[in-house]
Amino acid sequence: MHAFKGARSLSEFAGRKIHVECLKCEIRHRYDGNAMLARVGGDVVMPDLLNRIARGNGCTLNDAPTPNGIRCRMHYCL
View 1: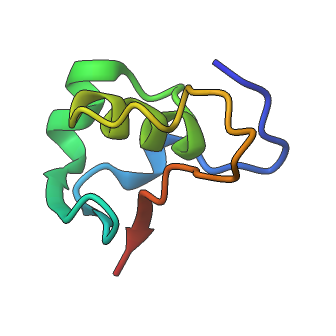
View 2: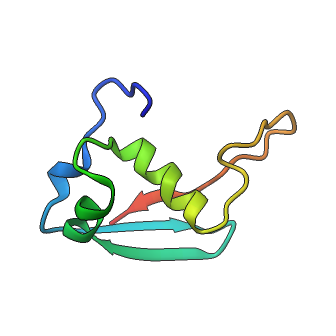
């Protein structure tokens, strides 16, 4: 887990849906907060969860060195 000062934790999303999308990769998913809590635990902060979701959907850009400026564009949405 990384240190993201002020980042919200997954435990705050119990009973809610978590929407993510990456227009670059054409990925759009909605996750159940309770199921995600059971899977990864409530102490995970949302930026780390986003990286896990991107990786789980096959994104290779979120961990790759980006000297050319290409970055993962996965984000939370409403």
